[in-house]
Length: 381
Image (cartoon, rainbow, N blue to C red):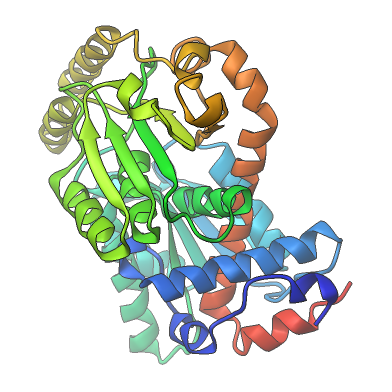
């Protein structure tokens, strides 16, 4: 093992063995040791990549990614991760599938899984549908492989659903550890709603953050206007995890209060829950006009809270006035965050975004590479 690797976190052999063949659909599906091991693998892959060492552990395998929503960073991260592992990435537009014509999620899984060696999925637009779709796809792949006696491992990676955005929040955790050290115990992190004039964005990023960071001892404060609650199951998970880890979780209705004394702030827009639930029914009825009307209503609700912006005054309320500004990008500059705050944080948010590539690499590697610990030690240029 190189000197560079010797300074990286230790790998847990038992956790590595348990992750072989595993999909990641919610961070709650994995225990803390497994998440720690995943991030340790991501750190090793990043270190190798930074010094130009080959990480082609899965040469010539096919890595599909199916997107039912727009994406720039996650598509790029998936393609970059697969290519660095020696795989061949293929991005599939969800609108080109047969789902709209009655094909079931399990059938979609079987059709893609019979050819692919890994599958990424983004299905985040309709509350209550994305996570279940992903689980059905995963079941369809598993059923096909079992029925045909195919020994391949075809992990499914959640690239954002209605409930969670695991590759983003794990990248955020990786970035926080780089800045604050491996332990987040005692660190105050504000996850707050922020105004945006654009479409009603999914709840999955704030939900993923509160349910992941509370598992690692952080003191998380969630702030939002009254119309923007998160789903009860994710709120319950955050409270439970905070109690188990020695961290804390609280809800406030003031952006200022959330920022006070914070070590890191994550101001991010998401849609009003009531409108998101109405959209579910309109989508099931295929009522496109109602969908448009609900979107307009959600944007009007957003506009009532234009003062929820991450600005220089609020940043001055944070710990020593120098909190780490975080965002999943793209941020609505001038609405979610002022140009000055974003300019000061521009390198930090780019580095934060880049961690997603290594998280995806790690998810694919732990699921597909036998004796991964040994193989990482053998990585050479």
